[in-house]
Length: 283
Image 1 (cartoon, rainbow, N blue to C red):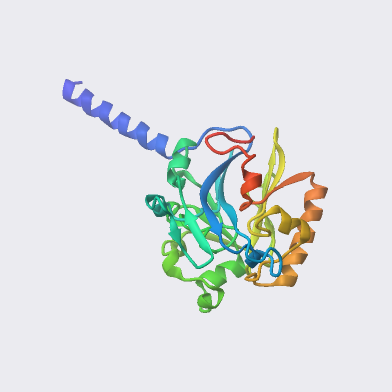
Image 2 (cartoon, one colour):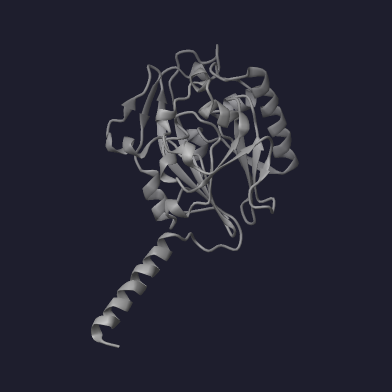
């Protein structure tokens, strides 16, 4: 073999190995859970989350995203605010009541965890509110796992009625998708289960994860936004169905007790301060 041919072969092997590395996730023998910081929300009047309670009080919420690495694939759960907001050092006033900041991009946190977006097998969204879908375009190949009602509220003819606008998620309609009408055992072994949890939106859902060392965890979606509202079963003024919201909280509380699980409230800043964030993980 000539020197030129040898150099060409070496280059092809290098390119191949680089592509392979970019398409793989950490090898695991049991599920691993990463927690990402996907923004913060300064709320001027927190009573919007609990009508008649704490009127005029300010509160800061966090916006959490997650990655599950499983021997059979990977699942991203919620995608936070858009990474583009990280370029705004002072954040952005998105409404009279909410001021948003993003300090670190989701893409960079995935990179630190050793996972490229194109390696993600599944994209699970608790619901379609803007603070959960900001980076869906990072995962165009992932299979979207969503309750049928939520999918229809996002892509059906009445999307605007539910506060949804496809301009905010222009790539998501092209994702392969699996529309659910109940719970889903994602990897078939009971370790990662999407739980139907209606009320906050037409097809809201939560995520249950079983970990060998760290135990069982339920990721809340927006069943409640902070601990006090969970404990008192308070329902935000903007929820789709108040009665269904309370019913879901009661059912999930029973599920948590029966499965000896911890509830991680995705927007609870104080709780999240005591949770490890990527590149550290739970297993």
